[in-house]
Image (tube, rainbow, N blue to C red; front, side, top):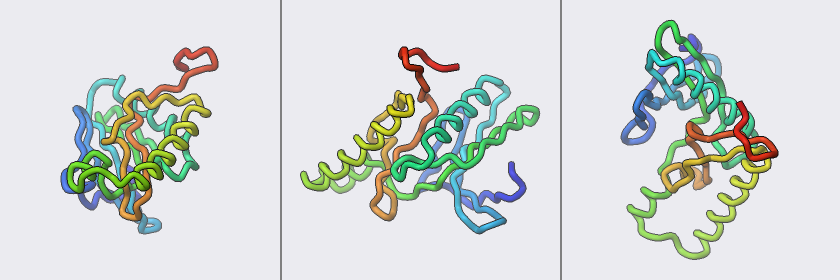
Length: 165
């Protein structure tokens, strides 16, 4: 991993885990900022291609305040490791929030929905299709801001609706 980053813990109560990956909290030795890092461990080259595609999509969407920002992608295929460094989003996903606190009040639900629609519109303007959009991929951070994340199955499409390579 980048020598300027140090793993300092897990993200949330339980670290987010996938089949070949885990998400951890890290800290930059240069500026002291905290980030999330998705750590991929696999001998399958396709996993690294997939990770680089996810980062490319995140880079394409950088700049929107309600979409998690991609910072850096590091592939170490020879060591069977890869790292996707991104904005750290601490809080809880909407599904957990609803399960914990019950449904949102109508006014708050409308405001959240409006933000989500604007973010989805931004993605679609940039030809990105999320493909796994659900309440567990929409976070309410500690500042009560909406953040859309998890672009690992997302695709970029061309003007004919075909997937870009």
